[in-house]
Structure formats: C-alpha cells, structure tokens
Length: 113
Length: 115
Image (spheres, chains in turn brown, blue):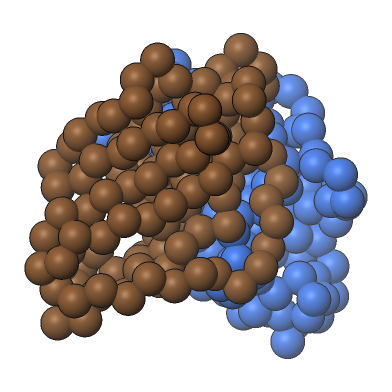
C-alpha cells in the first residue's frame, strides 16, 4: 500500500462548472476502487466506490467511471462548488488480498467563485 | 456513517520526547486499523497495519521501535512516536475498517511538530 509522493497535479475550475479528476491504476488484479476527498488539515473522507463489475456509478453530484481496459478511473463532480475544493485521491484494492489499498498521488481541485 | 476520532489534532513537543496519538472508532468495531504519514502536498504513505490483539505489520522502511503501535481493543489503537526528532514532524492519520473490510474510515489527522 505504498504511494509515490510527488507534487500534486492541480485542476482549477469556476464555480458551477463540471470537474473531471482522473486516476490511472496499476494493478490488473484490483477489483475495488474508492475516491476520497481530503480537505486541508483533515483526514480523507469517503466519497464513492465502485466494483470492477461495473463501469459507472452515480452518487449525489458525483459519478465515478471505470475503464478496466486501460486501467483508468475518473471522478466527475457536477456543478462544482467552492466547498468541493480539496485534494482527491483514488484508491485501488484487490479484495481477495490483504485489504490494504494503494492510494494514487492525488489531485488538488481549486474552485474559483 | 462510521466515525473515527483521532486525538490530539495538533501536538508540539521537544526533541527527544515521546508522543502518543490515539485513534478510536466511535460507532463500530474496528477489526483493522491503519496508520499513515503524509508530507505536504503528497499522498498518504502507509506506515503499519494492526489487527486487534496482534502485533502490527510495518511497511518496509518504517522503524517499529520508533513508531510503536498498540491495538489493544476493537475500538482503540495508539501510535507512539518515541524519542521524536524534527524529521518526525509530519501529519499522521489513522484509519479503521470494520466488517466492510474494503472501506477505511479516516481520523482527522494529527499534526506533529518536533522542535
């Protein structure tokens, strides 16, 4: 479950726009994926999850898309609000294994009012 | 949803002292707890995984004598940073999972500053 630390990519959007945050995962055996939101100085919060037998899942204002062919995950946030400003992490898990997720490097979302 | 409480949220200590951080699952039994370290603008780095009643499993490169983890009950795990030095200054975050092993619920984190 080790993550590689590099400076975070940043996505800047205007309030009301839709945001798309992307994540590439590495393990073909991963079958469960989670998006977390981390606000400054706080711990990550669960947003939405998806299993590998699905390619899309919707929540409230959020949609996660999974493309297993290219090992890509995305989080779409509709009508982005200033309160959505945070760092977003994807995490991948192989549920038949140790239940220790591997976290992506994260994307910093900045929403301008 | 499941709530994980982490305490303290911020601690400043002198070099050479030890600091204990508590992580509690408030409304569920945490069969597994995780401890992470996070540097500014970086992702979470897993330090160790602990199951209730057994010794923690440390990730490669993490000194188990430096970062003591105790998971004595299904609702409490502690991380003690022993003989802290300025390079130990960081943001430490715990998480816990219960019956739904796939999902971890995170504490709010502890900012440790070692002078």
